[in-house]
Length: 327
Image (cartoon, rainbow, N blue to C red):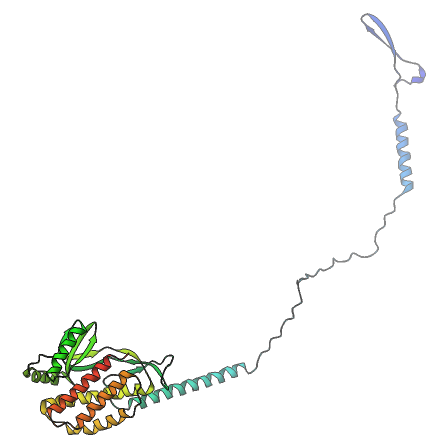
């Protein structure tokens, strides 16, 4: 490099054949001088210095954070459970008491059933008490009583589709001195002329009536089960009267054939008559039944001839007719 102090440098340039002189002033930087300035800056930086402040304490382990459960609302106190030390003993005691009670009830029921079934024979029409809300009948309360099917042997004089036709036939028979009963069943009207305890006796009784010019047919006749309202007294009457009816039907049918009564049945009939007479019945239909069966019993006890037996038959036919009307 040429120092500027030793002389100026000129540059000649020809442009289109003309010479032109240029003077250029170059700035020359001394790298040594820059080095000195850099060094001076470093010394000045070292002079200023930088104090590092480090903590004297030993490093501490990180703090342990515990999980906190937040509950909104009022603070709920946990109830303390109380365990009864006698819990198992109480359960055992209650089980023993329950077993004793159940056993006593079953034993009482069994004893009652045995005591009840030791009684007399079941009447011809069994009854089942289905007590519901009471219905006032005079001074007593009536309840629903279930009557089972009633069966008996009869002499049937005909079957009619209308009651008017049957009534006309009854009037004809009455004029001949023959008692009859009309019973409605399954939409038809049945004309009954006699009753008996069994079918064989009914057939014999029918042959005897045919001799008098009356056409009859011996058959077993059933009145279906039904539910009726009756007081306690009326219920007891229906039970006793059904049993007495069966005895009277047998005695009267035999009396028509033989012309005399069976004295061996007198004691049973007298006992049955006393029982039914003491019952206080109020319903009109049951009152009619009581009158019919009571008259039949009295006439059977006094029966001497076939004519007397025929009168008993008439009362029993009236009993059947009233029975069919029970509601």
